[in-house]
Image (cartoon, rainbow, N blue to C red; front, side):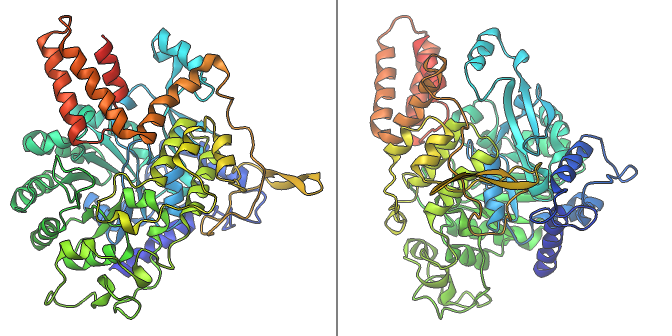
Length: 586
């Protein structure tokens, strides 16, 4: 079954990279650009089996199947880029797919955020954009957006590349009510291959709205959301949850079964409980029991997530749990080429320890205890220094090139690069095995000085770009040793391990000295967050303490501030201190 699904996926990938006449878009077809744009225009028209697209590649078989059959085809033997706020945007998703990921999730998007957006064909990038128009913002926000060169006409909530992501893209939403979930899903499901509901995020912005991990303690509401989506959306409906108990698998199993009974066609389980900090190892023993018992009684795909930093980790957790797929979050940020599977090896001839020391189909006798396995250094073909892995510096360079290709917001691109360069949220026992040295000597401080994509390109010496899909030739300009290349050709082969087309940095955004220093200000939060996180959290704590001495604060405000302070002690919250600052200044 796994082999046939991989074969089907490869066929889908081949279809999505060819035009209706069978020509390859990636190299010699000079008409590839116009065909790509025609495909995008065609995608704006509603399609159905009665009114099929004449330009889009033929829909994969699972679009003609039931929801459950479609989900089984989509998730079985899958390796997935997890939904990560600010990270799982177009550049990282495309990069993951180019290095072997079979599916990619969007970042979690709150249901209401997609309501005011307009679906726009971006012919220059070859993408479908969901844009929140500027005129729908307040006048104050509109004035600020006018000063930001990246948002002249509105805010881009979601950008999808249908040529690369067709058959491989899952839209994840944060929602707390069935009717809101349905309205959001109806907006985007035609451009997605599945809809996922986040039921595991412990962050304050999610939980306070009754979303994320708040649903774990409210199964009735969680099941209503799944049921509403399943009855009305003709795509696979899945949920991403986390363990409900640190040692007892039964609460998690019962919750998952209730979702499945309500119509969930796949379940992803993160191996931590609410309150677990990221430096605490994922609870693999409980996770394995949850998956084993679910697979004994349920037929839906079950995906595992949590601390899969090597192929040895992936193979071992697959073998012991019997899961249908795996999901990578922080390990993919550390090195996205971890998705490269390589040869299937079932013995340990190339390793002194690790999953490949034992046959993948062996019994569970004399197993290495999972906590011990997690803390070991994995050598050999599937280890930390696996020959399957590409240099981390190359991955960061390729990510920056993708950011240029898809015109990512410089602030967001810088944030992701900083996350790729540090291991502050890796499990403590894993940290010694994760190499943080770079040939160019780049540091977090260097990245924090960057204000534009050009700055990132220069710091990381990115010598290639990924061409746009709507042009037809490569023209060299200049002379002597410094020769620029004007890129006007079709896309670079996504299966390549490096870029073939070189260029000097192009102008991607205005200098941060323009526009009254607006760009300078919006970077300060992330800079301090990465450069000195301990001092940053201390300052936030002191601000809360000072607020308690103010008589201007109401009892409820002080209670909320105390809760924020406790959150920051437990969880390294990365996205919402800016809102808290406003609260404390009110």
